[in-house]
Image (tube, rainbow, N blue to C red; front, side):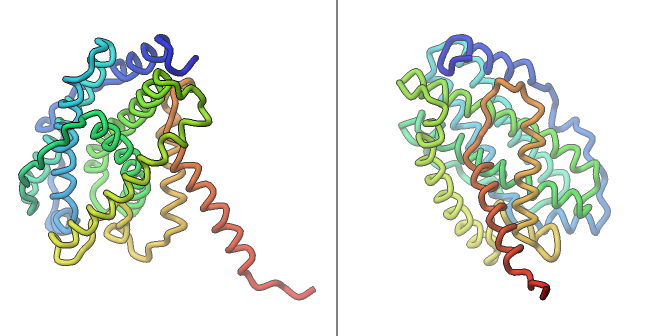
Length: 283
C-alpha cells in the first residue's frame, strides 16, 4: 500500500473506526478496594498530572478536528477526541470513587498552531505509551492492585495503543502528501518531535516533583510499583509489551518504530556489557 494514497487514508481511518469500543466510565466494573489497596492506589504520585494530561489531550484533538477539511480524516480524528475526553472522565471517576487527592487544575491556553500542537501531542503519546507499557506490566505482575482494576486500565491502554497507531499512519500520510514519501525517511522526519517530547517529559517530571513533595512524576517511575527496580528489566518489559500490543493490528498498518529500535539497540548493548563484565573462567 502506497503511503499517502487514498487507499492508505481509507485503510487506517476505517480500521480506527471499526476498532472503537463503546463504554461508560461510570458503568465499568470498578472493584471494592480494601484499606491496603486504597492506600497503594492513593500513594501513586502522578494521578493529578495524568488527569490534567488526559483533559488537555481531549482539548487539543478537539481543536485540531475543527481545522481538518477532509471528511474521512475529520470523522476519525473527532472519534479520537471523543476517546481522549472519555479517558479524562475515566480518571475523574476513579479519583471520585476512591477518594484520591488530585485536583482539577485549570487548563492552559492552547497554541494557535493547533496542527503542531497535535503533532507534539501525538509524539508525546508515543513516548508515554511505550514507557507506560513497561510500568503497567511491572505493576500488574507485582499485584500492586487487584486484577479487576488492571482490567479496567487495560481498556484505556488498548485505546492509547490505537491512538498512536492511528497517529503514526496519519503522520506518514500527512508527510507523504507533502513530499516525504520514503518509509526510511519517516523516522528522521519524526526525530525532532521525539526530542521535543522528551524535553516536555523532563518539564513534567519537574512540575510533578514540585506538586508531590519532591517525588518526581515520570513514566519511568516504576519503583512506585516494585521494589528492586532494574532498568534492564524495565526496558525489556517496555519492548516486549510494545511488540505484543502492536501485534494485534493489521500487518499493513504502520507502527511507531523509533523507540522500539532505540530500545532494541540499548538492550543489545546491555547484554554485551553484561557478557563482557562476567569473570572469565580460567582454561
